[in-house]
Image (cartoon, helix red, strand yellow):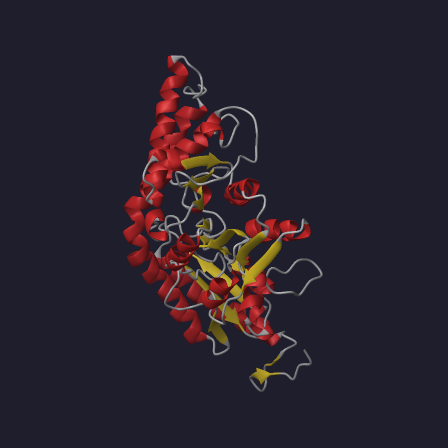
Length: 397
């Protein structure tokens, strides 16, 4: 029997059946424009308002006005940073971390070329943010600080509440990329004291193509798109109604199932992680063991290539992700693992497994049963491993 085990939920998730059911009427008979004055559009507008409230509850916002629907998490990130910079045009210093998602890092690199002074905060070997470096970097010229809530590769959670409290005292706008946190751990924007926070629907069982940006009331920023009055003029363009309805339903379900992540999902993640680390002597955990989102583990397998592991796993119906961002002709590991100082021999063989509330115990058992064949086969053909002596070969790196 062909097996399909999906353990790449940090990349995207399946649409929850309840979400799809909620969306279908708005793809068929309820196709009205929520901005229209007639009843056909007005009934849709009321459903959009309810979805907005559901998303507000997911992040702990005071009211639904603070939620702006966007197309993606990347758009939300850009809207947050560029919108604040458009207002504080006389400030030319911006701060982020070295391990952010490309949605932020690529934007900051672009802004750096445009003349902004950028500070990239380092992390330690376990992926923890250097808070002393962050505190020492903020000055009177700082326009915005953008820090992720949880890392997409390692799952490590950053001290966003501590950062928010510090920046609040300094009067510096704070944006949190919470794409990998939403639906996995509780989010309370008032405890974080952030001004802006990004989430993306397809990371918590909503469809792709819908995101949201929390904007605290009173936050000073300007729109980066111009057009109609939608989203109170903050993000013009006809609303993606089916996506919004889907995200609202998914947000409601995410709150309901949050306890499952701290119990059932975490237990399965821990079982997988323990099984891998005890089965292979050259394996190691990438990231802080105690402070992670409960669905994610990133394990490095020494002296073999992560891309090869993924190919073998794919042949067995197992979907995971490499901790290596290798592209064709490149042997560079991911920027996250490089920033953490993960050794070359482990960084190249790092695999991220990310679970969801739909992951089954028997799927974890299947992965653990198949991994020995994969790893041992790759060690046999590895140019870095001596199979006869069961030790690494000398390398000139």
